[in-house]
Image (cartoon, rainbow, N blue to C red; front, side, top):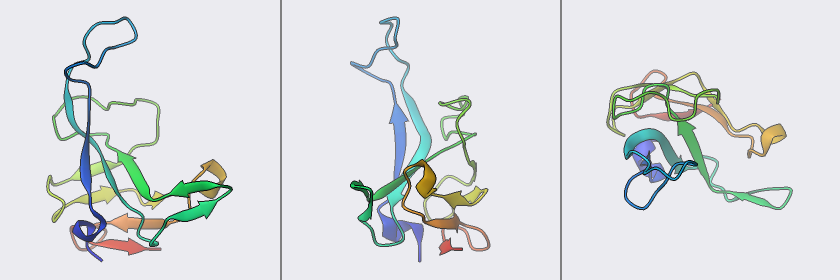
Length: 117
């Protein structure tokens, strides 16, 4: 399946009307991560949670800035379109951490392709 079939969206942060904890305006960020529909065809029920989309933060955001959430698990991005995206390592939505159990890759061998392990 192709990532483009999973309604992908680049995730941003900050911008007009958004403030840091010290009440200073938050600098706009673009492409800090990716959100896409669950390849399992969710909604997946897991202890009353409804997981329908996955969020993958990047070590190398599209805007060239630093990682947005240092200390959190992140993925390294290659390329900058949904059609050509490659991420490493694999993505595992761990049920022990509230995920639905999907484990797979984006662009492992074919850019933009989503495969389940």
